[in-house]
Amino acid sequence: MQMVGWKDASAVVTGEGRSKALLEYTGMMDAFRKTVRHEGFGALYKGLVPNSVKVVPSIAIAFVTYEMVKEVLGVEFRISD
Image 1: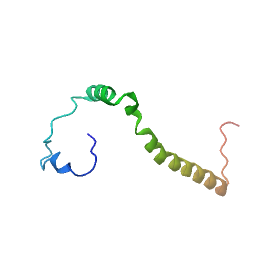
Image 2: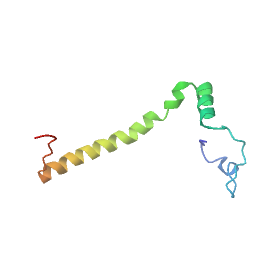
Image 3: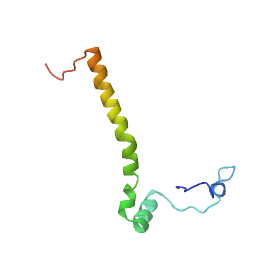
């Protein structure tokens, strides 16, 4: 379940961890069907862009750092002789 804001957060879960709200989905396939039916197939991919904005710079920094350290240390990596 995804929440938007903190306004109704206290009404969702009690101290014992039991939900006060009715279950929205009965399982994974039910969640998949309802999402596609109510929001369309594109809703399954709506987190792709924000995640890419987070991951792409991280991978780029790791790659550049690896290449620079490899150059500073003078390491040469060959797959075959």
